[in-house]
Image (cartoon, rainbow, N blue to C red):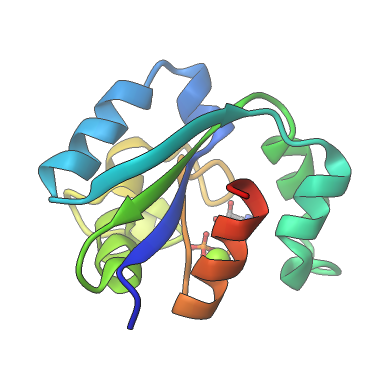
Length: 133
Ligand code: IDP
Ligand code: MG
């Protein structure tokens, strides 16, 4: 088990001035932020990042959305970071997310769901290398 994960504050949250509120929740839940950057994904990069979803019905909408504005990328540390952070962000669909989760608080819908978190230690390493070299 590694103790790091990658988080992305997605365009809908950046557009609505929620960067500070979301980082506050992350820090209040004892994640340590070691790197942070603002980044504007292009389509080629977004398609690579989400290549596992290529061919799904929502893929094009997802790429359009993720390239629509800047994102904030965060490298986070905590014991059992991947699963602890997935718990904090909540279900992909905000209607199904537990109360108090970031998606329940802020997501607009199932695509524009405000925050990304790596789903496994292997993917956390891939995603961290994608953004932080
Ligand atoms: P996750 O972000 O909770 O890990 P994934 O299944 O990996 O969810 O999907 C990646 C992203 O694609 C989601 O966060 C969301 O932005 C979008 N997405 C996933 N499933 C759907 C869907 O059924 N409809 C619309 N957008 C979706
Ligand atoms: Mg995922």
